Image 1 (cartoon, rainbow, N blue to C red):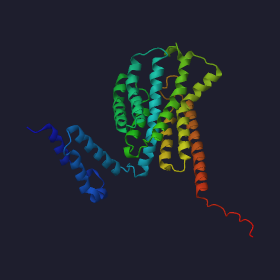
Image 2: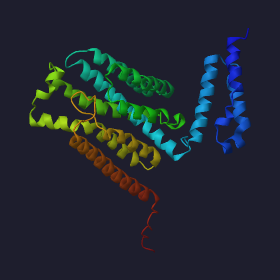
Image 3: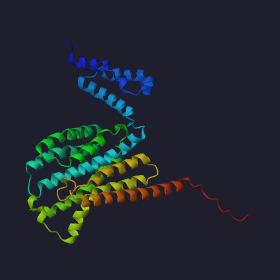
Image 4: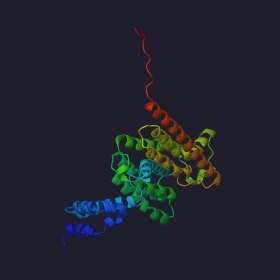
Length: 324
């Protein structure tokens, strides 16, 4: 009988992994690819061998699709991934909170919680610097979408799908998991979630069927009207701060701008579970988001160029003192 711990690694060594790579890369590094795979699975158990093979296969696909860390598109996605995850995690917190507090958990909230919890856990993994578990949790969340659709209660399926796919295809080796990068991600999530969570107090003791009949004072109504654009505003400011730093990769900073774009399909209060159904509201929100993004991008580029000019300008001639 074949040993379970050697059968799968042996099978993986026979799979045509090198054929997944682009022809030029395969011609230059074909032997190295096979040697790396053989060394990785030689004494590995089935689970480890499969993980190593999948990592090399994913690297091959990223090279073929020009989404590796050395390609511009890959660097943009690597910059976008933490910001996308931060926004998704913050929105998940809102779903859990808004679904439970106003009228108590129900069957719809349970489905939404199962859809949202992986995003919150993935954000916690990023806080700890664990990107692989975070991606695995997002894959689980993406695969849960058909289940949510089957129950008849999917929440923002298009937005969740777009964010999850963009995060999953980002090259892991280019994602900023430094202490500063993790702080940016968790700070952005908190800046999105906390103010919007504070709006929950407006709905305490109110049943969902009574929402259309509620009338709020002008100030509170204005805050509710502006709340769908708040995630985009927070991420745009993060883009501004990152772009203004002279040593920042501009493509990474551009990735944060990419992370703003899904929020043009903004979330509608009070429950933040769907996009606005009114065309005028949707156009207004899209216009606000794009205007904020264009403005902060222009400001960031001006700051970046100004700082770079100051750093590269030669010192002026020093005034010579009187000669004896």
